Image 1 (spheres, protein in one colour):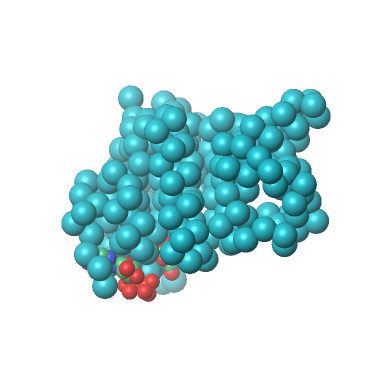
Image 2: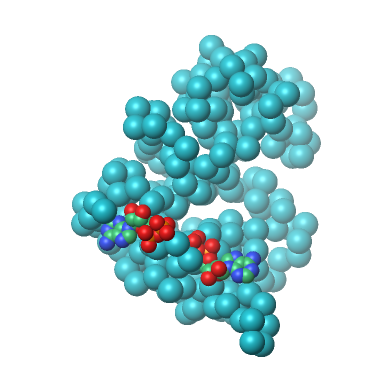
Length: 233
Ligand code: ADP
Ligand code: ADP
């Protein structure tokens, strides 16, 4: 079975005369091990789809199976546990806590997971080594470059060994050089078996993934676009 299986998903915001159909009849499957870009114009439903895929938001209609489980049947606590253990989130603006070291930022998801302090330290160190920051454990975010901060955020996202890494414009705040660094990390993680799904507006970024899903007006208009077919500007 697919890791992500959206079946005729709709998401409607508001009600009656203020109704907005953010997603309409979206069917999409993403298998374990895939590396996918989500693209499309502003307002086409990309963020809404990411929120549904990440179990942050429930669809209004249709069925969503994540890792074989029908999300509609799960209560809020179970969904929160799935988000913590099976999904890692990366954002455009890193969302690191400024007063904490890189190590403590990365260890945070394990605090909620009830992992003992010594093991938290060990696993956070390993995650930071995996993103090439083994020598930056005690640095605070303000002492790191943008690309390094995003790598800390990626280490935090993978520290609970998720099945899925969901990234929303992960290179949107980075320059060309640090974008390349961050994309190398995503590629390595995907080669290690993690499914990666990212929203991007940048064709050069999408071209480094295996598959592009194109949204328009709340619908998937192409679920299997070849990355090399994404045109520039
Ligand atoms: P925004 O208001 O976010 O700029 P646009 O409608 O301009 O929304 O499109 C969003 C992004 O989608 C653009 O930055 C562009 O890179 C990308 N895009 C749109 N159409 C195409 C296309 N045919 N091929 C490749 N990229 C595209
Ligand atoms: P994208 O990420 O492609 O820019 P969104 O998923 O953010 O698209 O938005 C899809 C549509 O849903 C847009 O028309 C947007 O205005 C609307 N929308 C998104 N979030 C909300 C919300 N919380 N309340 C009402 N309308 C929303």
